[in-house]
Image 1: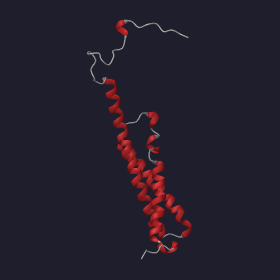
Image 2: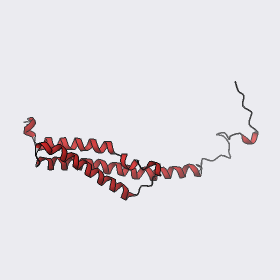
Image 3: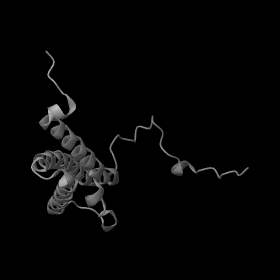
Length: 141
């Protein structure tokens, strides 16, 4: 068991009832908060841009895939998805999000899963709505 030396009177932390202590945040913590807000807000915008572009890519892939041969539809859809993701990376670079060099991968990885799943969801949904007779989707009477 180790004993720690007692603190001197002037080194003790002030308690909650100390009249000299005010509820004012230190300047370091507020600076860190504003830096975090500036960094997270553009990444949030990038996330939602990618979600919207994923939906758009799925709709375009379903529309264009309808006029293409059946065997090449998956390749056309995949090409559209990759093309619009590259466009979203260009948008991210144009936003000039302030990131340290160690976090540059965030421009690529932010929203990539949501982009992919929204693409697949909207592609299947639009394709299903375009061809209701293929799955016997009859209106309810």
